[in-house]
Length: 226
Ligand code: TMP
Image 1 (cartoon, rainbow, N blue to C red):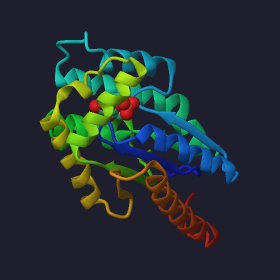
Image 2: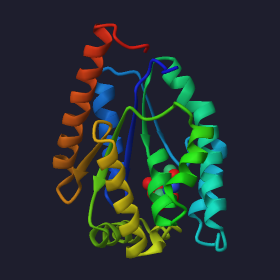
Image 3: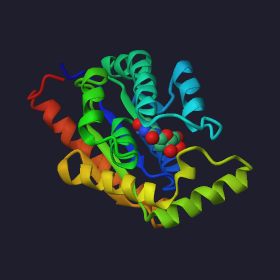
Image 4: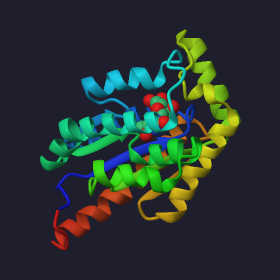
């Protein structure tokens, strides 16, 4: 059964500015008075953050794509149990920097494991805990990867395993996200990320405001099982 809280996710290839947009959206919703849980994947729990370390570490050389997918769903199972389901159960709005669409896009399309394989994991691990609204930040991989590299130079941080994959991989991931958006237009909204941060954030807020308004109308009609 659907839990009372709302579940919003942010997605996109590496270097779209997603984490900045996530932070700004969380600030906005907190100001509006929402009881909110901000989180991220892979991660969001101690176990999940350790798995994230394995997944992103460039020294993790020979990780089979299927092992990668299984680790991601292991982290997700922990995240669901410790964070997402309890928060939704308390009626909080959960805003996650990535969730299961990332697995469809990165592992299904990027790693070419296929949509069916990812959906099989998803059905077992996530079940009906699915996002209510997903914002996909869309950007040409050439620009996105240059941005991601600039960020690493500024922070003196190292490139992660996924960022190191190059343009063709990210072009497949991008195509994956756009395919998901075409299949589920009412849940998944695509926002162009080749614009200033404030402009992108303004569009995200408009989409989230519209979504929250629709949800409160449905709620006040008492028409759902929320
Ligand atoms: P981040 O840089 O947005 O925090 O994400 C870390 C990396 O993990 C990013 O390159 C995408 C990757 N990833 C997957 O490949 N599959 C997934 O399901 C998730 C959640 C992330």
